[in-house]
Structures are given as C-alpha cells and as structure tokens.
Length: 99
Image 1 (cartoon, rainbow, N blue to C red):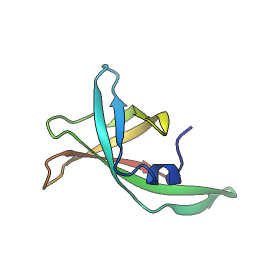
Image 2: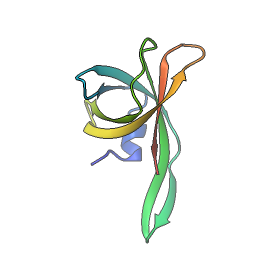
Image 3: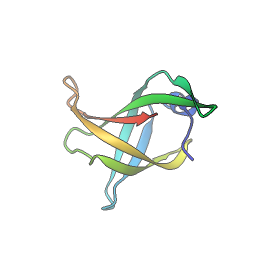
C-alpha cells in the first residue's frame, strides 16, 4: 500500500532509495509535493497530487515503475517520469503523479 499525501508531505527533503530491475540503485530527494485535490469517485474521496524528486545529474533513471525504499515510509513501487536536469543545479528531476 502506498503512503498517503500527508505521509509524503512530511518526507519532503528526505532521501528515497530507488531500485531498477538491473540491480542499479540511486538516491532521489523528494523536493516538493503539490497540494492534494480531493474529489469524489463513486462516493469515495480520492486525492490527486504530484511530487518532484531530484537525483544525480550524471545519469537518468528510466520512465517506468520502480521500487522506492524510505526509512520511515517503507518500500513501495511508483511510476516515475524523468523531467530533465534542473537549469541551476543540473541535477536530474523526476515527477510522480497520483490521480
């Protein structure tokens, strides 16, 4: 089960270990999280939000579902999309969307 919006928002600025199928691991820092937008789907409240992560600038993780591990939140899979390097830091940026 994925952590909630609240749990992710309390983890901004912390490191997530990301594992690819090839056994490669990378550390991504959760840089920001959007405000959750609540909506009703079949009578059930659902949150929609997105998170921005930042990693090393010398490589790019693939766009796909990867395994994330965090010391407080545990282990879970999320689909990431590379957004290219930050113009100032040159570190690679990634986006995760929940809707």
